[in-house]
Length: 185
Picture 1 (cartoon, rainbow, N blue to C red):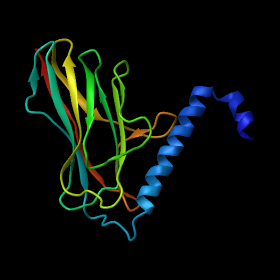
Picture 2: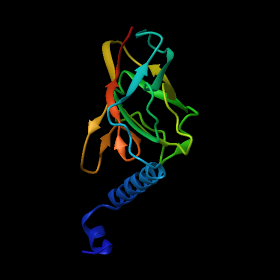
Picture 3: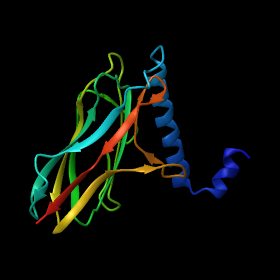
Picture 4: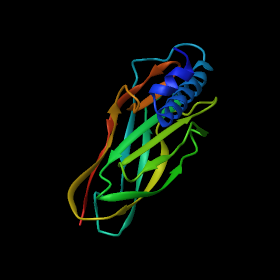
């Protein structure tokens, strides 16, 4: 079946989305293949959301940082997919850090209707290592919530693959994902 025939069965928006996902995959693969050797799979790299507080008030604008946490592993690319309750707060700004300067696709992609944030970034040599900031998020508290979370998506497959990864030399080095639980008063 050729592309023209597929276009009859798959809505045009999904075909465009699939092309974008393929492009992102190819760019990340090229970034990774630009390295020689094999990554040390014994070490892991964590993704972590951090904040100076865990309690905020309605209307307040507050900051949360998305961090890479690693002892010594180098990082060629990061795909971070974060889910949140859009009725509790909205993301009003996302300032990307300096360590991963290659923007892949539509990054950052903020969807305050669905409660999703998608970030795909990469780097050329020299690759960053250790602990560093991927981005700084500014959020606005919308309503009271005794407890609400920002969590990393691990949705695999299908047209909406949102599986967080940290890549180097052809391997996913992602160890743990540490979301964040906050309250709004």
